[in-house]
Amino acid sequence: MKKFLTVAAIGALIAVSGCGKGENAAASGPVKREAGNWKTDVKLVKFEVPGMPAEMKDGMAKMMEGASGMEQCFTQAQVDKEDIAAELAKGPGNGGECKWSKKDVAGGKIDVAGTCTANGQTVDMAMAGTMEAKKTDVTITTKGKVPTGGDMEMVMQMTSTHTGPCKAPAAT
Image (cartoon, rainbow, N blue to C red; front, side, top):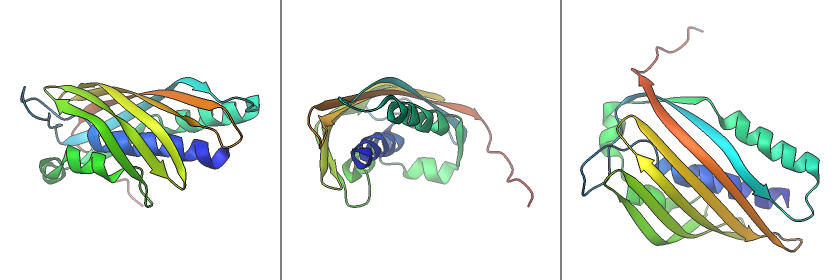
């Protein structure tokens, strides 16, 4: 069960990292994010798994909290090369793949849904939210069967904010 939950969480994070990093504004196409430093906050909104002990649920909540505050620098060259559709097609990595039944990423909005498979587990995933040059706010809903029986559902909110120019690397 722990492996399944990790796949679901990582799949959601990776899928959104490719499409929800703050792409910016042509009304008809994908928004491009602004180059610079970005900070991402993750909030676990809902987490239901039948029969899961409270300490495991708490561990998952702590894992999500640990992902909050992550900062990353994106150069202009990286931003120029971004391809949302290609990132979405990759799925959750390590041989995982996603088949998207809905992939609307345009005009400052994201509305994506499909099924992702990784490590023998399949989950339904939906992402909905907004994208601007300096901020992205996406809610990710992941649903699937738990190997021990029953249905799991996880809802996360990821907010990425442009915080200014890239920071100088720390001296070692």
